[in-house]
Amino acid sequence: MKSLAVGQEVAIKILNSIIASGRIAHAYLFKGPKGCGIEECALEFSKAILCIGDEKGTLADLAPMRTDTAFSLSCGACPSCRAISLNNHPDLFIFEKEGASIKIKSSHEMLKESLTRPYLSERKVFIINEAENMTPEAANALLKLLEEPPSYITFILITSNDLMIPSTIVSRCQVIPFSPLPAHVIAQFLEEEHGVSKEDSLLISAFSNGSIERALWFTTDDGKDVLSNRSILDEIRTSSPVELALRYSKQSADEKGKVLSTLEICFAQELFSQAETGNTGADTSGFSPGVCEDRHLLASSIEGLNTVIRTRERLSANTNPFLAFCALFLNLKRILNYQI
Ligand SMILES: [Zn+2]
Image (cartoon, rainbow, N blue to C red; front, side, top):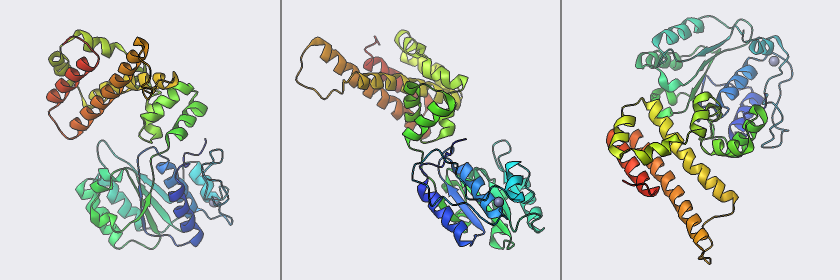
């Protein structure tokens, strides 16, 4: 697999220097969007911490943004590295959500494992994925461990929302910042690794919020549906805004998100195709009916896209979904010149 750590030069530089110095802290907080390579970096960093080989790798000689070399800080050949590759390392523990949260059971397991010394490596590493989902009880138990950690334990907390983690925990961690992946990296990954067409890769990368995970969602059946579904425009044309708002405001958060994504993609595709034909709306010298029509289409696409984005913001700010959808469909009918 190609490295997803491209675009994470700052984080990689910090991780490199930590491994080179040999001074491993008790707790790190990997902070950044899901699917930007953060999970891969946490695993590779753990591998390097646990590595018992003589020569550890370094990224120092790699050109920035190079995508054809795997991200590697460990030797890759010692018994510890091999055990991690086989998903079978006795000193590496990965904790994840069970249902909606990371529960106290996980903290109890951490406590139990922290009482015994490492078996194969010099340290034990506990990775806590999506750490913002810890229940208050689990977070409290973790805090106690962080207050007086055994010398051989390292915690790696991964989060896309550190504001949801108690500040008493965050203050005990060294923060490693990760950025959203650049759109061109995502587009290239989709094209080369998943055979997605160039046109779709560009479109998807623009709507992936810097996350490979989100980008890959567009290659699932649900995602493909969002990419190709145009029947929503017919629905808007033939139904009243109130009728549509009643229908969509009752759906689950996932379904609401899906209809907004479908609309965003509709307008974005229109914008992309106009950009390809060279119509940027910047030329004001022509007065032919065709040019006027193109400009109108361009303005409508931008306004439509903005309207959908505003609705998404309103919904995440807990605006009444029925009212938010009413405003959305009423505005879209006007923008698309459909009869209200
Ligand atoms: Zn090794």
